[in-house]
Length: 249
Image (tube, rainbow, N blue to C red; front, side, top):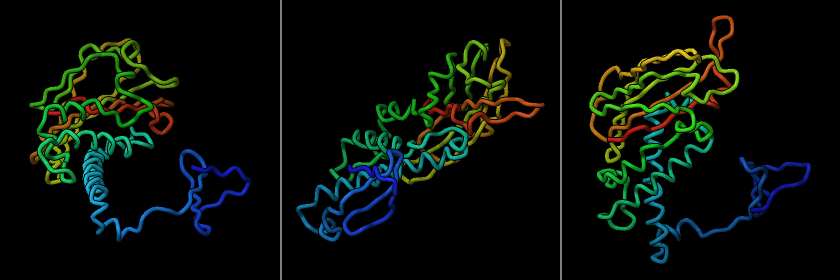
């Protein structure tokens, strides 16, 4: 991919060249590829159509997860979470060993323990992976959605960013049906703790079991704040906050 190095930054199309800006800088590419009508109808592109159908299905499954978790993601996610989640869903879709090529789906694969295991542990913010933030073990009750942490000492058990004075823990229990593309979620109350040497037992209980059927997805989020004059402010717009799928059932 060619890069723009000049002083003038172009955006848009000039002849057969397309100028655009990405996270990697100002880039330019030449028009190319095969006509869309041919791809949609030519037997020679059957594999391409199959790949496209499966990719679209995986992208839809990724969006389904993001929609369910959006309230939490507003405080803890990175700029590439959509691409990372789509990639994960594609790998899960590949576990579908019963459907024909072009018809494999995340919904079929999710019946397998291996698929659930791949979804477990996904971090929505790669800048703050839960395992590198929380060093204390936790227990998840998949029957009630409760998340428990015993004797949490924030000063010792949490890798907190400079300037943080307080932390908030919150949980979520989602039901995600990857077959019907429906999702619901229930959240726990937030537990706010000062970052000091005081031990606390953290008990996060969802308001209710989420309605509907589907895969149970359990989430844990940690947010950091700085208190100034009795008011807590989020640090760097949530850049240090962790959000992870801690269990899938």
